[in-house]
Structures are given as structure tokens and as C-alpha cells.
Image (cartoon, rainbow, N blue to C red; front, side, top):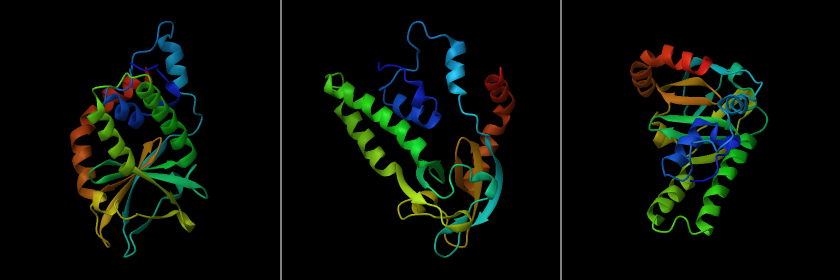
Length: 200
């Protein structure tokens, strides 16, 4: 397995994405204690992005994001990513690219060392998903976001339709209303155990 790099695998989307291909290990190296690992996970001093807001997609596939979810997103490049059918996520571009580059470099180094021979189909699959998963976007005035082609179909909301913008602690997520309701119905029962596990 690859070396455990917390500077990028601390973000669940990156950690699970590369771990699902068996390209990283989530086991810390010898000598790395849980306490220090937790300290690295919690280095950000920014507030968690929290809130649930209903929005309408206009005829030009645009929506306005709530002002309290715009920290680190307004007036600078952002990354829009496909999370799951009916859901997109919006990230600060610099933060996203730093973590993504770290992960890609680790995979490339493993390939160059010949440690991925016999796993080319997985590498190809990773490349396909990396090619389609995200794109750079720029918010317009008043936090207005235009959903690009290729992401509109994935989101599954037609112009004039309603969607949900959700603060997902470290990023902003945009959901079709039906997919969001399904997600909440499936996971709300896990809230207390999740909260206690992260707060302990």
C-alpha cells in the first residue's frame, strides 16, 4: 500500500475514491499515534459549512447559493464535482487541486515502480472517472452558479425545477430534491452515533 498522506486523505471524498481502487492504505505507519492523526485531521480553523436551502434552477441552468455557504468560494475559482447521481459538490479550487495532485502523484509513483502491473483495468477506470468527475467553475455575482453541460444530466434537475443546496461541513452540495430526501431518510438514524464518534 502507499504511504499514508493525511494532507489529502483527510477529505472523505478523496480517501474513499482512491481507497476503493486499493491504491492507498488507511492504516497509519508505525509511530503515528491516533491523537496526532486526529490533530492533523482537525487543522482547519474555518467554520463548518452547515445549512439546508431550497433553490430553483432558472432557464439558463443557474442557481444562487446562500451567502452563508460562500466562505472560500466567492470571487475565486471553484471545483464542481460529481458525488453520486442527483448530487454535486462545490469546492475551493486551490484546496481541491492540492489534495487531488497529491493523490494522483502517489498513484503515478506506484505505477512507475511497477506495483500496479496486472491492475491496468482499475487504472483505466480511475482515469475515466478522474476525467469526468470534476470541472472548474466561477461563481458570478451574488453567488450565482451555472451548472455546466455534463453535470446537468447527472444532477437530474430541469430548468424551473427545485433543488437543495446543503452545507456538507467542508464543501457545498447541490442535490435534486428527491435524491436529498432519500439520502436523509436513509441516514438520519445514524446522526447520533456519527456525531458522538467524531466528537469523542
